[in-house]
Image (cartoon, rainbow, N blue to C red; front, side, top):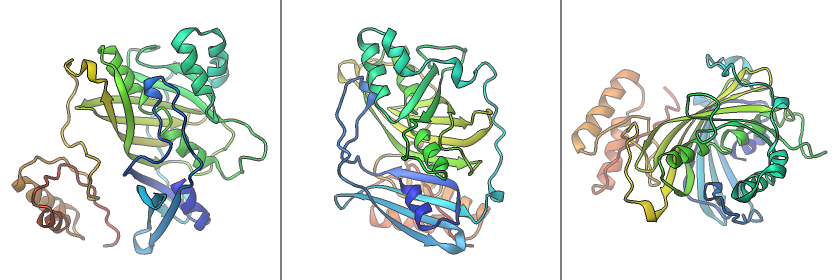
Length: 331
């Protein structure tokens, strides 16, 4: 909806990079990871404030619900699709077309117990879903989640130029499933999960709104409930049209909080209290913060990330930054 607001106000501009941060849960946040039917209230509208930085070909977007900020994002854009980068990522060769897999509606008719409940709940979303594999139901030796998805063909609800918006919706749909099932394979239950930071690189802007799209998602880093997810979205010709990187949050069930296992660990995961600066991994001591930011300035030139971070630390001496994301708006 944030990108749709930007495109509605700027129909002649083409987004090529989207970065969105979930600042707070809105009214109607529910988690399928719990396999429980939690009714979502979507009657309260979201309001978006869009601001331009024309020299940097960038716009900022702030999302509000009941006057409360719930999200913020940035879009880098161009005036034509020639600036979109092609993707080197290839579709797994064992995945067939969507017609070769049953939908969740068809699978629910044969399922029993909790799986039937899960499939029925998934079928209520405005998407046709064909699951292919996941860590608990693998078709390969890689822990990944693969699904074919398309918007349900409701007459009059989809416009010809909605393809990009629909693909962006798909980019965040079930992306946390792979991390949840990796936990379950390790005999750890997940109480809930949430998207925190979501970044999308758009490789193709002219997308068919009624077509099937394949999502291939992997998770190689899980650390203290934080997971880094990489997802690739392919069209029906198996061309990669979007690349997605997301930081997610997984809350383990309290009754097994003592359970321990070993994953590939990574430092630098962000908290809900974040500062919008350039991406870099840093330690919790004061010295490397400023030294690392200064080194980054020397590499990129232009605006000073070190002074920005210094300002934050001067105003918040008790807080220790560990993730920085910085936007260079102009040279």
